[in-house]
Amino acid sequence: MRLILVIPVLLPFFGSAQIDYENPPWSLPCDSLYSQTDMTICSYRKSRMADSILNLYFKLLDDQFTEMYQSELNRKEDADLYAIELYKNIISDLKESQLQFEVYRKSCVDLESDLWDGGSVRPLMCNSVHLSLTIDRIRHLEAKYFERESY
Image (tube, rainbow, N blue to C red; front, side, top):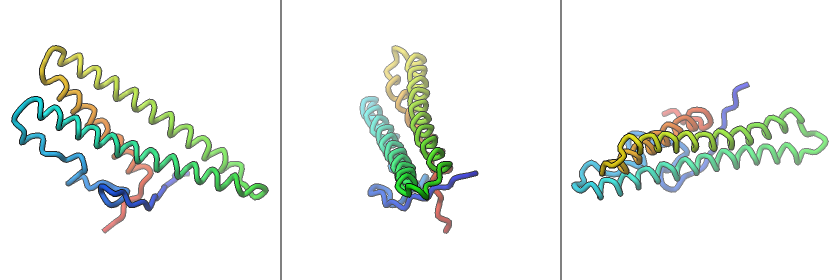
């Protein structure tokens, strides 16, 4: 059984539950900056913007599945025990997958940090890896759980 979840939430910073990847919210003009410090600060901001979006997506999914779980529990004698167990497992697995993603991402950033140890570009490279992996995770969650509107 494939579960498709549509969350009709208007997100204040990009207007829908899907991101316009041609002009994403983390698209800051870091390339036009001149100093290493400014580029590093900008890359950090981009990375944190994507991270906040990922955290919001995770919260939306967790809230939606929790609501579905609670709704089924509230049906009392009509409750579908299979659905209750399914939603309980989905919530648990979703949380575990996010925790494992964060461990994986930290490991990749640590590796990048080691590769650039002693270099002034190290924070910029670490932010780049953090951003790239976070965007990949956002895209995965969108593709798996958020139905795109067709135009």
